Every structure is written in C-alpha cells, then in structure tokens.
Length: 231
Image: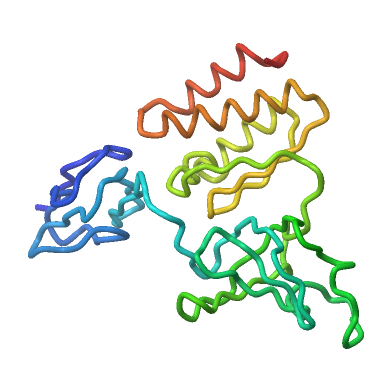
C-alpha cells in the first residue's frame, strides 16, 4: 500500500524518505529508489496530486522556460537589449519579442528601454547557460515605472505568491499597492501611501523569514489586520 511519510510544507533533508509505493511520483529534487521517493536537498515538501517535490530553502535562481522574471536593462544594441535576470549570463530581448511596433533598422532602441530600466519579461527559450531568450508579448509583461525593488531568495517566491496568487492578492488588497513578483526573486511594488508601501514590504519580509512555519497565511492576515492603517 502506498503512503506519504511527510506532510505538506514539512522541512526535509537529503536522503529522507518522503513516500513509499508506486502511487506517488518523484518531482523536483527527489528521486525514486525502488518503491520509495527520496529527497536530494534541504527544502519544503510540496505535494501536488500524486507528485512529491521539494522547494529548496536556499540556492541560486535557475532560469526555466515559461518563468516570469523581473530584469534590469544592462545593454542596448542594434537588434535588442541584454537583460540581467540574476543569472551569471545576461538574457536576450530582441526587438521582435519586445514590441509589435515597426522599428526602422538602426533606430535608437534606448527610446524604448534604456540602461537601468526594469522590465517584467517571460523566458521563452533556454538553450544552455549562455542563451536565454525573453519576450514582452503577454499579459502583464511591461516596463516598470517608479517604485521600490525588493530581493528575496527565489525559493521563497511560491510562498509570497501563495496558492493561485492568494497571498500576494491579500497583500495588495490590504495595502492598495501594485506588486509584481518575478520567479527570480525580484519584487517591484508601488503605492500612493508610503505607510502602506512599508506595510507591504514588511509583510513580504515576514513571509521570507517565516516561510518554513505552518499557519503562515493566518499570521500574515493578522499582521495586515493589526497594521491596516499603515506602519
């Protein structure tokens, strides 16, 4: 008979048995050994249907196709832009993937995105460590305006977003801030009230610090409720 040996969000270590039986499937950072699923790194257990996987507590961001990330324009070329997404090699954003506008050959592309601009983009291709292609053609993909930037470990991003966006939606509702979360751990936020901005920032930091503790959603809700007039 198949059975789980751990619970959702439990912290596990390499070599720990997570499940036994063939009804469960190994996911990220796990492997099968005969009829058992074993953890390969320290992290939080995530159970999605029959899939058992680990969300690492530490480690660098690794680009994956389909990820939405926030990046910094670090180079403007003739055919597009180079973007720092927190990976050792800059990613490529070509003109054709950045805009539907007609742009004359040789045009000054800094009029669209310039050095130091931050953009929300999607990774559309990963062909080795040095070739990462981005796109801005999709819902929510855009150049970011004035606001605050936060950096959190990429492993905490799922907790900040919450199931089906529930956690980040709650923070938006209580603070009135516009918030964009990149899978690479960069978060942009902007609000009309500086006190509400600070509340949003402290809420995100609280999630980062307490992501491994159960009951996180209720604690964040209580924190927002007790400070709903701003910090």
